Each structure stands twice: as structure tokens, then as C-alpha cells.
Image 1 (cartoon, rainbow, N blue to C red):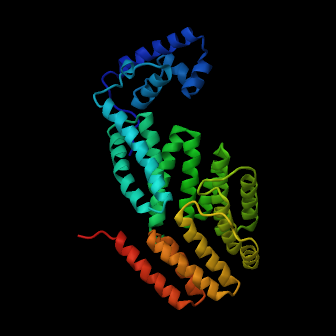
Image 2: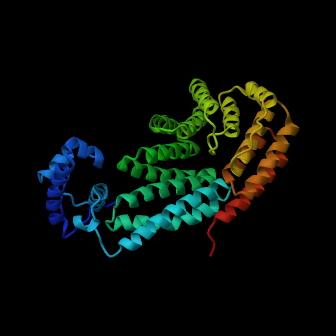
Image 3: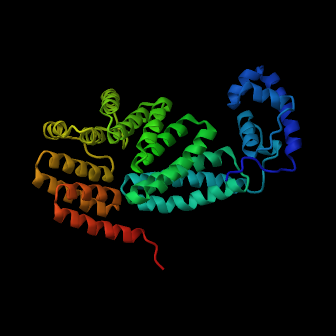
Length: 377
């Protein structure tokens, strides 16, 4: 449970001083309450209530935020403590940890990313639970929770993917509370995708449609459209899929995509799988044969994902030898990068087509990966 405020012996004094500070700041800078509210990111009514004493600000994060915007030392509003130096170091270290974990995940080392993120999330959760809900802490907590969920969604088997969705959902809760649009758009995209993987496809579509509305840059919009296309396909909605994938292609045609979800290789795989999912296997086979993708995947896991999808398309076209080769390549790479979910996709495709040897090979790999995820001792 989050504690958004904390008892503080200096809170009443700090709030009284805050009333004077806000009025004085406005007069010196010739600002209206409306303009000050915009600067602080609050409603005018909220600022008015603070200035008239009708609202007591006990929340540490709110007072620290106001001090930062007004350029005041934090102790003026009663929020500086002996841990400030440690806090600043933790924020800097934590931000680097999240960035490095994301790099590791995208490089095919999602297990390492999980191992880096767990301790950071635990420390941030403990700080917030102790009443230190500073703005920077909450932003980092939202980022770390989301990153942990996405990394778990990469390494967990299908039956445990709900855990990944729970963590991205926790990240989304923080983003909703803070109102940071960039953080909110990212959290919506990632939570929507993990909901899709956990087979909550309808909820995933709603999150991804909202992510598209909130995203303010081309890469964010492209990523939202990529994930929405995937979810619409799995929902079995050809109209929504066609609309989303067409918009995705349009953004990609006009803007150079170099992110993991926003590039020609990813588009090609999503287009193929969406056609298969919406009962257009023949069209997918024509696309695979007539329009081979020339771009390289920006992350190793996308090579695995694409090979499984190619195997599904080839099976639909009756090309069993080509499908067998594609699935076996995918299985080998999936074991190397510890991607049980993709192993399970390959097994299903093989079992459906009665490729018994491929399915048995996949089951053996899946057992080995599950053993790695099972605690011992």
C-alpha cells in the first residue's frame, strides 16, 4: 500500500509558510493564480485553497515538488532530511539501473534485466511505504515496475505471464497518479502488451488505444500501433487489425523507425501474424513469399518471434519442410535467450501440424528452461 503523505512535525509550519511563499512568488513574478497553477501542474482551485489555508499540504512529495518548481531549498518547506544525499544517489543509480536493464533485455538478456530490477523495485517500494513519496521516487518506481513486468513477460512461460501483467499494471498506477504523459504512454503500451500475452486481449486493446491517444511522438505512436495491431489480430478482429496495421505502415513510411517495436522487421512479422490470426493464411503466405523482409531485427528475441511466425505461415501454405526448418531455428535461439513463451508457440504449431519430432524437441527445451526458473535448495 502506498503512503502518499507522512506525519511531519514541521508540516503545519511549512504549510503556513507555503501560503506566504506562493503569494509572494506570484507578486514578485506578476503571476496570476491561473499561471502559477500551470507552472506547478495543479488546478487553480487547488492553488487558491493552499493560499487561503483551506488545504494543508502534508505530503512530502508535493512540498518537494513545489520547492523544486519555485527554486527554493527543500528545507524551507520542511522536507530536507539527513538522507538527502543518499536519496539523490539512489535516484541517479536507480535511473541508470532501469536504463541498463532495458538495454540488457533488448540485447536478449532478459534474465539479467530481472535480476537487476528486483532489488531496485524492492528498495523503492520500501521508501514509499516509509512515507517518502517524493516525485522523483515515484517516477523511478513507475519506470522500474514497468520495466520489471516487461522483462518478466520475456522470460516467464505462458502459465505465469499474469505476474508480468500485474507488475506493468502497478507501473501504470503510478503513471496515472503522476500525470506524466510520456510515462503514462509508455506504461499503457507495456501493460497493454502484457495483458495481451496473458490472454486478456479485450483489455489489452483498450489500453493500447488509449496509449495511441496519449503518445506525443512518432516512435511512441508507432510502438502503440504495432502492439495494437498485434492485439487486434489475436482478438480476431480483421477490421481493427487492418486499420491499425495500415496506420502503423503509414507512420513507418514517413518516419525512420529504429526502435524495437517501430521498424520494418517488426512490422513485417506483425503483419504476417495478424493475417494468420484473422483467418487469412493464404494472404500471409503470399506476403511471406513475395515480400521477404530485408531489414534486420533490432533485438534477438524478434528473430525468434519471426521464425515461429514464418513456421506458422509455411505450415498454412503446406510447406512442411520449410516450416520444420523455421521452427527448429526458432527453438534453438529461444533456448539460448531463455524465451519459454516462444518455445510454447513453436510447440503448438508443431503439434497442430503433427511435426512430432519438432514438438518433442520443443518440450525438452521447455523442461530445461523451466528447471532454470525453479528455485532450488
